[in-house]
Length: 75
Image (cartoon, helix red, strand yellow):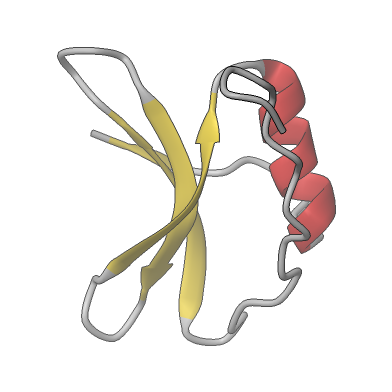
Protein backbone atom coordinates (compact mmCIF):
# COMPACT_ATOMS: atom_id res chain seq x y z
CA UNK A 1 0.00 0.00 0.00
CA UNK A 2 1.37 3.37 -0.95
CA UNK A 3 1.21 6.56 1.01
CA UNK A 4 -2.32 7.44 -0.11
CA UNK A 5 -3.55 3.99 -1.14
CA UNK A 6 -6.75 2.37 -0.04
CA UNK A 7 -6.64 0.21 3.03
CA UNK A 8 -7.29 -3.46 2.71
CA UNK A 9 -10.50 -4.66 4.27
CA UNK A 10 -9.94 -6.52 7.50
CA UNK A 11 -11.72 -9.76 8.15
CA UNK A 12 -14.46 -8.97 10.66
CA UNK A 13 -15.41 -11.25 13.49
CA UNK A 14 -18.97 -12.36 12.92
CA UNK A 15 -19.79 -13.12 16.52
CA UNK A 16 -21.42 -11.29 19.37
CA UNK A 17 -23.19 -12.38 22.53
CA UNK A 18 -26.81 -12.52 21.40
CA UNK A 19 -28.08 -13.00 24.95
CA UNK A 20 -26.25 -10.06 26.52
CA UNK A 21 -25.71 -7.60 23.64
CA UNK A 22 -28.15 -5.67 21.46
CA UNK A 23 -27.25 -4.29 18.00
CA UNK A 24 -27.55 -0.48 17.98
CA UNK A 25 -26.70 2.38 15.63
CA UNK A 26 -25.33 5.46 17.37
CA UNK A 27 -25.92 8.70 15.53
CA UNK A 28 -24.33 12.05 16.35
CA UNK A 29 -26.75 14.95 16.62
CA UNK A 30 -24.13 17.50 15.54
CA UNK A 31 -22.35 15.79 12.66
CA UNK A 32 -24.77 13.04 11.66
CA UNK A 33 -22.00 10.43 11.88
CA UNK A 34 -23.37 6.93 12.40
CA UNK A 35 -21.57 4.03 14.07
CA UNK A 36 -22.91 0.49 14.26
CA UNK A 37 -22.13 -1.60 17.29
CA UNK A 38 -23.47 -3.50 20.25
CA UNK A 39 -24.78 -2.25 23.59
CA UNK A 40 -24.46 -4.48 26.64
CA UNK A 41 -27.78 -5.25 28.30
CA UNK A 42 -26.20 -5.54 31.74
CA UNK A 43 -24.21 -2.29 32.06
CA UNK A 44 -25.05 -0.27 28.91
CA UNK A 45 -21.47 -0.27 27.58
CA UNK A 46 -21.33 0.40 23.81
CA UNK A 47 -18.84 -1.52 21.66
CA UNK A 48 -18.45 0.09 18.23
CA UNK A 49 -17.84 -2.17 15.26
CA UNK A 50 -17.96 -0.12 12.08
CA UNK A 51 -18.67 3.32 10.65
CA UNK A 52 -21.88 3.59 8.62
CA UNK A 53 -21.43 5.89 5.62
CA UNK A 54 -24.05 4.48 3.28
CA UNK A 55 -26.86 1.96 3.00
CA UNK A 56 -24.34 -0.58 1.69
CA UNK A 57 -22.37 -0.33 4.94
CA UNK A 58 -25.52 -0.99 6.95
CA UNK A 59 -26.34 -3.99 4.74
CA UNK A 60 -22.80 -5.31 5.26
CA UNK A 61 -23.15 -4.94 9.05
CA UNK A 62 -26.43 -6.87 8.96
CA UNK A 63 -25.08 -9.65 6.75
CA UNK A 64 -21.80 -10.11 8.65
CA UNK A 65 -23.54 -10.42 12.02
CA UNK A 66 -26.75 -12.11 10.81
CA UNK A 67 -29.08 -9.33 11.96
CA UNK A 68 -32.57 -9.12 10.51
CA UNK A 69 -35.27 -6.56 11.16
CA UNK A 70 -34.82 -2.99 12.31
CA UNK A 71 -31.87 -1.82 14.35
CA UNK A 72 -32.66 0.83 16.96
CA UNK A 73 -30.89 4.16 16.59
CA UNK A 74 -29.79 6.17 19.60
CA UNK A 75 -28.50 9.70 19.80
